Length: 87
Image 1 (cartoon, one colour):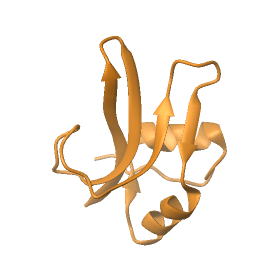
Image 2 (spheres, one colour; image 1 turned 60 degrees about the vertical axis):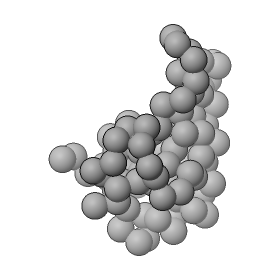
Image 3 (cartoon, one colour; image 1 turned 45 degrees about the vertical axis):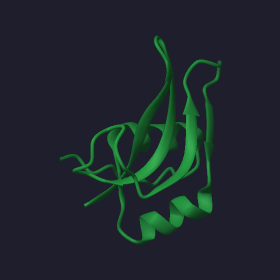
Image 4 (tube, helix red, strand yellow; image 1 turned 120 degrees about the horizontal axis):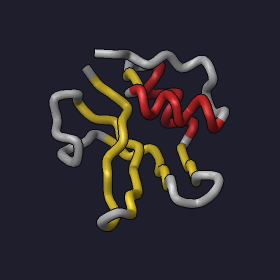
């Protein structure tokens, strides 16, 4: 199954995340299909940059967001109707 999830980059004790589309069997920082945005939790409020067109296209094609990505999308107001797929 294809998932929309976070890939951790950045330094020690200063995480920065890329929002990527990847096969769920791939490692967290392993291979991915496409990068669709970034998430920086340090600023107040956190900086969220996501390409909404790519996001909608991947959701339409059946990609499931992880729980953390679904929470980020809900709080940013990009797609409030996103349902996360647990499992």
